[in-house]
Image 1 (cartoon, protein in one colour):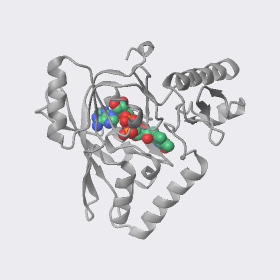
Image 2 (tube, protein in one colour):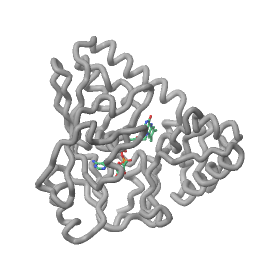
Image 3 (cartoon, protein in one colour):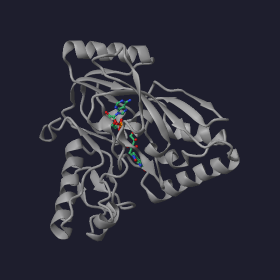
Image 4 (cartoon, helix red, strand yellow):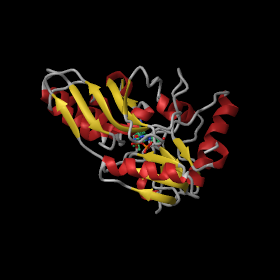
Length: 290
Ligand SMILES: Cc1cc2nc3c(=O)[nH]c(=O)nc-3n(C[C@H](O)[C@H](O)[C@H](O)COP(=O)(O)OP(=O)(O)OC[C@H]3O[C@@H](n4cnc5c(N)ncnc54)[C@H](O)[C@@H]3O)c2cc1C
């Protein structure tokens, strides 16, 4: 099964084993099976922050995007969502209920699980700010899911403990602010989406911003100032619209994208003495110890 269709960059080789469960019980049974067989196990969401190598992935890859659903209590602002729920869908839903808090999430094309793992954020908001707890499970103990509080998850800029620990996210609980005018929250949500789609290359395959911002600098501005917009390797191109995006112009391979990432890093290091760190997760690249 090629993983190309399971990433927003539209690159990536085959998974040795692949599953897209419809129910949480199936996900847990698959995790038990892979653990019992001693296979590497990965759960992915919408694949919107992944660079998967052309050689593909050993072991079992589980795509979580069918495990959707959410429940909310408009009076208390409590929202519980399955890990595969698209975060833009959730942002729209809570806005319609007059809950303030997720207006920033509407332009992030990932799942709730991916947002928790990555501490996704945009336009002044982030997951850590509104998450109360995440339901996680250790694949070696699939019968013992447990809630970890936001404090337990050690959130930082685009980082959480879950990037180190092999825990699967099953669901997330947010505490939002109730009692707002649904029309006003929905309008702010739509305005956020509009401002993203007009300044970033949403029509082309990408993974969003490739590099973390080396504060106080912005990665996009640094890359643009070095004249790298439009730079290409194979089918991979530094976006002409937003320099922190690398787009697949049609036939890019993961190797093209990887080489372009390295070229940008080298030039920024050489000319500005700044190390750019990729925000995107690279899977299946031996050099990264994956
Ligand atoms: C056009 C575009 C714009 C973007 N803009 C932003 C932005 O403004 N801000 C931002 O923060 N990001 C942005 N991103 C990046 C991306 O959408 C986020 O990082 C998102 O949170 C990733 O979610 P996902 O479901 O796609 O996760 P994936 O990319 O599938 O996975 C990311 C990581 O999380 C792990 N993971 C995913 N789900 C689970 C789970 N249930 N249990 C355990 N591990 C899991 C994966 O193994 C992987 O390590 C953008 C991407 C695109 C394509």
